[in-house]
Image (cartoon, rainbow, N blue to C red; front, side):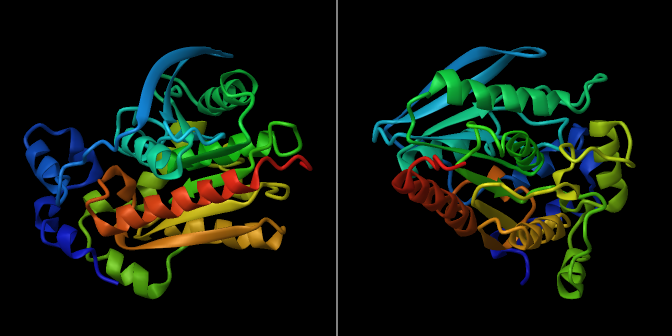
Length: 317
């Protein structure tokens, strides 16, 4: 499947550029133009937003709550991506996703400003922050919710998996996992030959080459060998996890990780399903639902939340 036609018409803007060029003021306008979507995002009505901080093992953690006026007694804790070292609760992959899911599914969404792997901060600090936010939501923030989901995108999906593994045998076990283009393995499994050929046609600024992936892991964990199972969770025991819904970006060097994760979950008896966003690169939830595949990805996640809300809390865990 080729790149989405709207993105393909603008891909020339990124020719000759790599991820490292994103911070170069001389070419910032090219990235900015590429990131303009078919239509500006309009905030859906009926969602109230509140910022606060909570206590964590490493200090205060900013969180943001999105409450739907529909009043559904279900909660999602959502973690943004950014390679463990970037991103925040204002980025579309956090803010837009949270508003859209709160509005579409009629649930409460809580996003987390976890500490980033910068200036000497490394694993397990981001996981500890994610876990602290999860425990606060379940124990204090929304203790009477009918059900609880945990999820995230890219590196945020990694942190969600890590947190879920820490609590799979506890009363805080999530009722559902929602993962968007997860980064769960190192090395990342190879793509099939057809997708790999399509990826070769994309500029480096839309790719994750092996050296970039290795540096991401080294920056996060401090090494690329003997990786802890709750740092890069695909290497660990995944049994006992709750039902899991996975969004995959079709044109994504990390797609092999999501596909292998689905195989692993099936192997250990975890119910899992997936949606493949055709023609989309990694990180497509950083774009607006004016792109059809972004809209469909959000609807897939919202449907999983609606199903969870109908089913209620799994008291047998």
